[in-house]
Image (cartoon, rainbow, N blue to C red; front, side, top):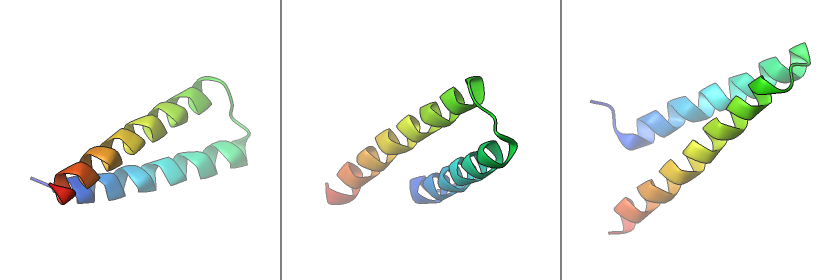
Length: 55
């Protein structure tokens, strides 16, 4: 099983790719909403990961 850090890295890469594709293709609306949701999940996972690392 992958570590949380590896999963965060993969999600970061996915988020960056999504941003690049959507900006190049000029996609908005639902695509932008899904990118925002991914970033909210990333933020929550990072916060959780930091808490576990400190604890």
